[in-house]
Image 1 (tube, helix red, strand yellow):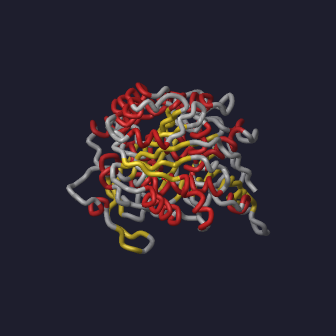
Image 2 (tube, rainbow, N blue to C red):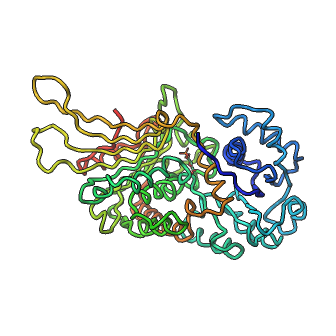
Image 3 (tube, rainbow, N blue to C red):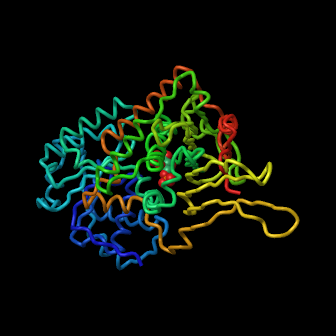
Length: 489
Ligand code: BG6
């Protein structure tokens, strides 16, 4: 049985308390932590939004959200205890003259009690909300503010948000969430790399041929057309989740697990990413947009049909990039990144492909390549593919088979959602799994360069039918390098 160490009593104020993120992720995550005994009963969860609502009604919203969240076995007695922690305050948090006194009256303004302001709102409100929190006199220690991605839409807007938030909160009070860093399998990447001596001597250009990082989704827009059409796959997924996975795969061992040790190593990787020039962008990247197709045997609409105002949007729903980490360890090793909506299946994998044996004594057609496949989701596993002799006489047949470590088989636990871990880290004030200002800005710098190259070369998204693995060009990009996207047999 896993042991959960309770956190100190805390107050959390969720701005955007009735929104999608709160209902799908934040409230269920808090409830799970309650069920595991991690949240003390004197804590407070205060939802806020601009609409009028009684606390009773908000508790009902929260209950429906928690009941709907997958994996929760309903326990009415526990819910009755938990809902006492929940409150609601109507507030337009962007306005200093809003009803801050009612919110203040609910908070326990103790110098030691963690006070979390979770901004589950549109990023363009972040600065105004932070200013209002400051003017209400609530921003001093031990307050902390949580910013959801996306932080801006480019380097300039990210800087403006970071500057504005920084006028009110010190960097140590700012928790920039990338929920991928809260995933168990993503954290396991560090354990795999740094608690096993086996891999480290092999973990460089000496023995690694290339790395593939894929986050494939089978979902489409899911009611987020407005946001998504202004963003696209590069800003929505690559700028944050995929680059974070790349950093954890490529970074040097941090000195310890302290807040800044990991982040300092990650930023070195981001700064080493080679820019992609306009004359290379069609060779090193692929932009795609899904058209109608068949998904799991059912007809699926194309992106333009899913948009309510189908006016020829050129937003990409698929990106593949051949990137390079230009440093001593990784010189010449391509890192292929790929993500897309409405792909054939939902799966996220990091594939480390090792170089073939220098001299193949088994003859042509016999593979001597090893692969370490880290499946982040959905069926979490680590597989090391090794070559094995197929039993039996009559020739020497070689087969690639995995040493298979399946999480489900090894641990038989409920898988905590990423937000559960991250919320408890925020209460504890542990910043190591959150992005530092310079990290977010370094990621934007690289992404901005890529967008400029797309624009300069007028690279419009290539169509791919829903339910497939992206445009043909993505396969051709690999083919040109004599490689393939890894696919589970
Ligand atoms: C979010 C993106 O950050 O991550 C979504 O905005 C995407 O577009 C989601 O669907 C994927 O997260 P997960 O945890 O389902 O892989």
